[in-house]
Length: 404
Image (cartoon, rainbow, N blue to C red):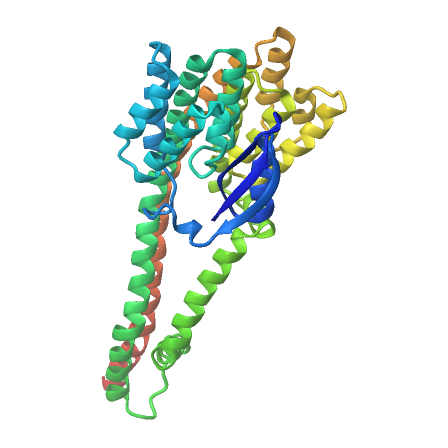
């Protein structure tokens, strides 16, 4: 990410200047255009990517939830918006959030709307956040929209923590498994190999399994730099590829097809779709804009592609429920409940109930997979140790018979 200093002309004809943070010059121009400004000049600020020198420059979800809840309370209590922003910027513990709120306060004081001020900080406030705030300002219901935003963020943070918690233990077991494998190959197997050669003599014929294990161990010890290089290089290469649009899309399409993980990922995506789309519709955002923002907020390219296709159908006059019914990614309950919402005009309320249901499903699924992963990882570790043990015990038994 880099910072771009711009000079632009507003719709009123006045010349304004400021900074936006974006991944490229083209993205920066798009952000400026979204503020209804006509760019006159744009220059990348050298070292701008390091303007926020704490961590990655992003605000933690928990901090954003607290800020949103506090801002909602202050606005509901009748505190002037500028005073509320100034107070919260002084109380913010995060340096990133503090700087962003100070800049937002200046923009609001200069006459900018809150939504436009938020849009200048895309690394702090998501598209969902910005669009809902803009809709709340336009409809004069900013306090209720902020409450809805805080609730949605709390739900998203809850799901994220549960998924992260479920994946922590398997990752630890996997690291231990790889560590045990390399430890056995580098230290244990060579020692046992020397003992077997000493007992059997230089002409001893070892079983094929033992020979294979000794060969793997010798290769890893002699060419350890190749093993480490391939491992590190492969990890970096795969990570970079997965960050590309094509790699991300392929990975997301693949992961939803995996036997155990796929259903959980799909349920998380469906819950996030229902919650986000319901919030945007409840805020008065248009259907097409809600679909676009929701697709970006889900975090899965497969579901995003499905919503892009659905939005094309909606643009051509087809109902959203009918478009989603044609897509196998969405369970039947989604188009059915959407159809009910479209008929009654209560799409937001209906989808919020669907989101609650799928969030409970995610809880159940995560609990189930957590109980399954532990024995699977134990079996994998046991199989690895058993393989090495078999490669050792075979020649020892053969040598014992020869001694007898």
